[in-house]
Image (cartoon, rainbow, N blue to C red; front, side, top):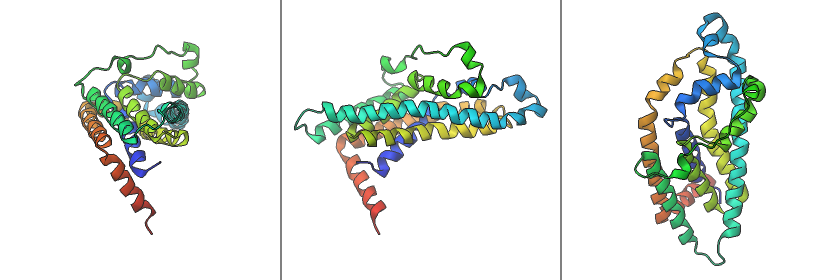
Length: 246
């Protein structure tokens, strides 16, 4: 069942993915790639404001690219969980297993444990000719990012996909990953709009990356504990009742 709590959790996971230490330093390169505006262009006060529309268009297409990939993953997670769940399987057993996984991902975000599969960047790279196309290639750049996410994003995305799998419904899984993509994409678009006026913004955001990542990891561990203990189901049911109350 789709609940406000689940949507909020996946949206926050997306926000946390944006400020991950290995995502923020790449912002200038991503923005330059999807807009065709380089550091030299933005250093020129007379020219940088003319790139604002290109930055907006490129960032929106970039976000659309990885959103499509993540939604497909959400559909798959919800569908596979429903198909592969053993007949007569206890819902509590599935919740406990999912909660333990989410907590493990949170510990990985904090650096307490290492999960090799989530710490490797996939070797996907667009041809240089396409990268130089700027806005025209922004959608594909976003799709490649979605397919080969950076190490810090991996645990957050895995936690979001676990929540999608716990829903055991394809459409719910897709909606949850839309919320995740919105959480990741919204600040990216905002930074793209501000970058023309504040070229130092990515560097300023990078200063907050480590403490915010630690807070995100702790929150993810807490979410896992809530899911494993059953408190998450009670909380989401309560929120659902509030949202439908007249």
